[in-house]
Length: 130
Image (cartoon, rainbow, N blue to C red):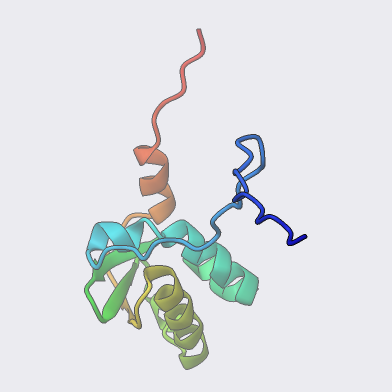
């Protein structure tokens, strides 16, 4: 006697669902790139402690378009150190992965730049205790 076909499996609503680990590519604008700065810092810190320390200084993404990301640093020495070929290569690879497109990274000194950490803190809602 031929085996009867099995009915299609019904998904178990209680079964855990896989967690998506890939991030959606960030938009090409400044806001999309700035949203990736915490992840960029963490990845850079893992790749190079010195590079992580430099990104922890007073710096932020001050420009972004389809092909380039511009990091502004308050202090000239920091901009110069991050502009070293090895550091730019690391940052370009990280930024390209996070933004979902190939970008180059350029570093400039900018007296008016504020820390990305300060911007991140300011954008979080205030917690109130009742």
